Image 1: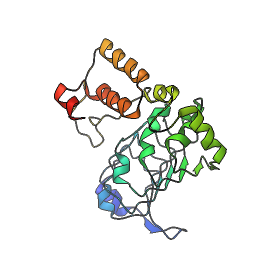
Image 2: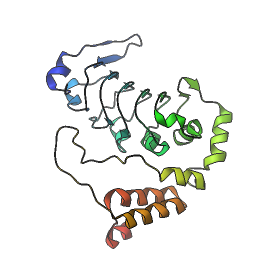
Image 3: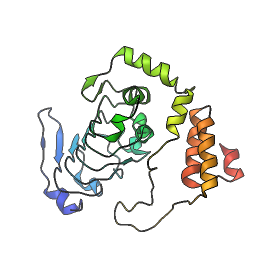
Image 4: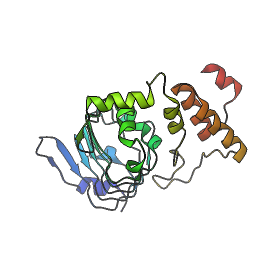
Amino acid sequence: MRLTTELLQAAPSYLNPLNDRELDLRGHKIPAIENLGVAGPQDAIDLTDNDIQALANFPLSERLKTLLLARNRISTIQPTLASTLPNLTVLALAANNLSELSDLDPLARFTRLTHLSLLDNPVTRKENYRYWVIWRCPSVRFLDYRKVKDVERVGAGRLFGSASEPSALAARIMGIKSKTFDVSEPLNGGQKEYTVRLSAAERKSIEARIRAAKSLEEVARLERELREGPQSSGDAMEE
């Protein structure tokens, strides 16, 4: 069932036990997030038990603090999502399809995020999973319902370095993505595509440069090339 204007207008909206205004969209088999602007300001949105594949396409929602998305099929997170949900503090993503550590990188931009659940995602079976999330998301205080300890933060720093000087291991992980978020994906049924096709040799060359990159900025630039193709010399000079 699509997330239509009619469904949003009929969905229950109430004050939850925390006295937050919550919109209940559980269990509708919704395949994609759309039209949420119709719902108006909310403190919490419950989208548990749907079929959402991409955590994306939210309107600017400065009031939203809690987002419940357990038991969906989410495998990608929109890189710019934090700019539309700047005050998000609680994010439940248990039982989804997030696979690679670097697929979680958009979560690092949520500077107010304190409670994060990723239980029962394939990514939780990756080596150093917990350390990685702690390193990438320093604001998180509770990960998978366990308090983040100071000793874990120290261990994460030893493994991955700092944001300005990531370790070789961190740079290598950031170069591995199961699926880069693609704006051409038909979240609302659109057909237009912007995918850039690289040859196998070009892709292999960029991936090798990512592994050898010495800064987060360089990794980000190379990942953009992997998504959008090599930049022109004029674009490169502007950076």
